[in-house]
Length: 323
Image (cartoon, rainbow, N blue to C red; front, top):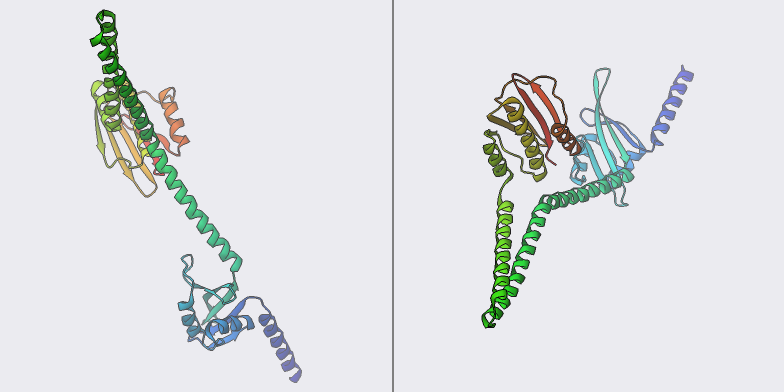
């Protein structure tokens, strides 16, 4: 009997020694917080943070919470930074041992992982800001080019006005001014033409894609109706109107349609578009040659998709990413 008791005692000491030498902190406690077993590591870390070892596991957890580093990736865990700069993660888990609840607490040194995650979060934030600047630049690049063209046109007209005023003055002072008057009239016509072109460029810049599309639809005798909000992002809007123009051409040419309906819905990341017409049925399957083939390539290159739904007529189904 004594020998058996000594063997059990020796085994328990070995288990206790193994737990104490375990590099991470471990504590097992009853449901009311009474510690059943706490190794050396968790006691040392808790002593540094709270000023005492684990006397009650529930109270220990409550003392650690105000000292926690803000985090959002786990709920039953606490991150604490020690005075030496190391970061420790405390986790708790409820166990059932012979139908008796036992709370397991763990403490792990995750300094390198925490620093890596912090650097990764900073890099992701910088990348996000860079993407936002790039997106704004892409949305404005066409506008900037048009503004530059308009500015160049204004400068040319300004120079031409200066030159033609000098020619006009010279023509008024010359006695034999027939040739001068001819050249003068020619220059004035050129300036007027440049002014008209500049005005046309300004009107084109101010017109919206929807206005242009409705004008084209009216010319070919087809009415366009929008259901839902159109994309706010310039790139998504351009993809949408490229698809509508192709659908409009095919609906009128192959199905004799006089009305095109565009239904638009969206979620946080994508737009969902259905383009259907009231034209007659078309023969299946659809051959993606020419315009439709080019449209699919353009959509897929920018992360969008193109599909068909066959009812009485063909409905184009698109998904367009917001970013």
